[in-house]
Every structure is written in structure tokens, then in C-alpha cells.
Length: 238
Image (tube, rainbow, N blue to C red; front, side, top):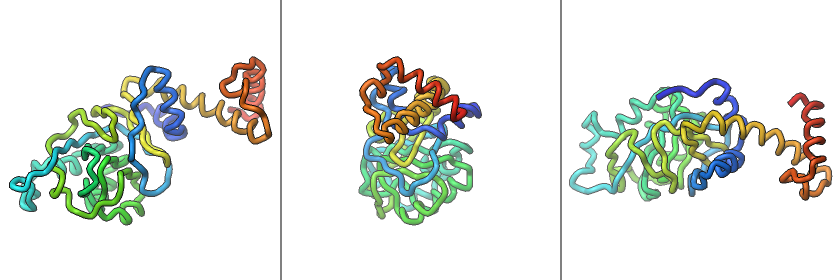
């Protein structure tokens, strides 16, 4: 995995997933926001490369507690090998009847420098994970061990998470609304555009709070809008 340029990382930590989905929509990408995946506790943006873990349904003769003795177990390997600054993205097939992982594994990921944890399943020990600094997103709490529903099969395969195709190395950005997946080759240009969009939206929000109509303002179909925006931006040093 490569690392994000400092400027791109900074941009992505300051923009919303809503703005990012619009920038991606302009490029023809409609299905980029993970569905039914919510943050356990609010905090700063999560930004990092996707490090994926794929699961299939568990089978009783294979998924037993002794299976954790095997150091090649993909779930445990993912926790021990997830790179610093990456986001562990777990394909749990939208099944939250059993945990994708719990507080002990989340703690290990946090101490290894993982930038976040995302699953379309659930977490056990979710109150403990919510209290951690590491951003964590899931469908809902789920106390049963992963072995009752999930068999981990592969690391860094293409996966589906929250109905979105996620490839290893894609850029995952999460805010307090949810998570968006940005194809790696678009990350830099999307970050730049989203940062510019955010400045303009701040201007629009201020005008609307002052009583302005959205007609001609948002979108800026009135030429006067962009003149006013340029003056506003200069006044505020943005």
C-alpha cells in the first residue's frame, strides 16, 4: 500500500461524506456511500486506505473455538498485519447476527496505528469500542462470537461492504454521518474538489442563515453569486 499525500490527507479530514459523494457523482460514481453503517461515537474524520477482510457464512464443522489456534486464521492475521494508517474494512455480508470483532481486537488495531474499523456486520463489546479513540463503524451491536455466523476467508480481496464495492487500497473516509469509498486513483482530485466545494457551501450556508433564497445561490446560476463568493472568500482569507 502507498500512503496519501499530506495535502490530500489534510483535505479529506476536513470535508463531509455528503460533499465527497457529490464530487464522485460528477464523475459517474453513484454507489459509494456504505449503507446501514453508522459510527459508534462521534469524532474527527476517519481517513485511510482500505485493508479488506472477506467472510463467508460459517459452517459448524469448521468454525469452532480451536480454529483460533491456527495462526493463518484470516481474521487474526488481518488484525496483526493491518498496516499503520489503513482502515480495516470487513465484509460481513450485512449480517449482524454475530460480531465481526470485539474490543480486544479493536484495541490491538488501535495500538498498531489502524486509522479505523468498518464492517457491515456488528461488534461485540460495542460500548467499549465506542469509548476508544479509533473510529469504528458497524450496523448494530452483536454479542455472539463471529464463529457462529462468519468464516473469514481472505485478506485484501475485493469485497462488498454496505452494498459498496471496496478494493484494497481504495480510500475510506468516514465522518459522523457515515463512510464513503473513493477509488484510489481519484482520491487526490476528489479531495481538492471537495475542499473547494466545502468553502462555497460555507458561504451559501451563511447567506441562507441571513435569509437569502436558494434560487440562483445554490447552485450558483446567478452570476452575482460567484462575484459575492469571491469577495466573501477574500474577506475571510479562504
